[in-house]
Each structure stands twice: as structure tokens, then as C-alpha cells.
Length: 144
Image (cartoon, rainbow, N blue to C red; front, side, top):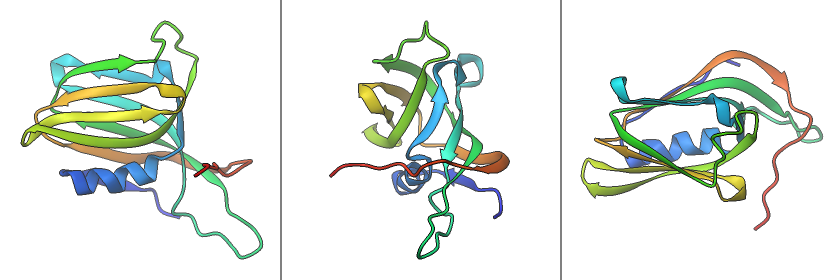
């Protein structure tokens, strides 16, 4: 399977990107905001939802990926212990709330109630797989 590379420039693109990073895992120490370049970066191990599964055998795969947001004016966290860099986070979804289009807030929602709010000039995000794939021992499960 080829490495995934996606760009999001509007809220519809962002929803597609969100679907590809659902259930990605990362450490708190892998979150980086660089105010000088207006960039927020997350290095993660994403579950490869787009991998084909067979009828009798599911294909469970993860890949190391980088997700970054540009044109970020500020970043706030809630429910994330920044003083615990080895704590593992599970990303559930990414959404956008327009304030003064194209500006708004990009919200990253994590399991356990954690969230990151990025104050952005506009939506400009990129997701890229940067490493090889490995077999995941299980498939993420969500209750309705």
C-alpha cells in the first residue's frame, strides 16, 4: 500500500482527514506548537482504516504519520497533562468551528475528555505517512 498524503484546505477536506486519523495514538511529548512558524505538529501512529480486509480476516495495520496545521495563531489544551510527556493519547476526531471565515478554531478531540483548540487564520493541514506499516494486534472499537 502506498503512503498516504492528504491536504485539507476547507472543512470538508478536514472531515476526510479526521476520518483517516481516527484512533491514532500519540504521546503528549509528540505535540509541538511553534509560534514563530505558526505551525502545530503531531507525530502519531495512525490506524490504517483504508486498508482492505478480507471476508474472514481483518487487516489491522498502523503507520507512523505526521499531521501538521499551518497558520496557527494560538493553541490551548484541556484535559491533557503537558507535564507527562509519555502519557498516551488516542485521537477521536478533528472539527472546525468558523468564527470569522476563513478564520476559526480547529478542535482535536481525544478519548478521556482531552482536547486541543487551535486558533487558525484558515484551514491549512497536511497528513503524511512517514514510515513503514506494521500489523496492529487489534482493531479499534466504538460503542454506539
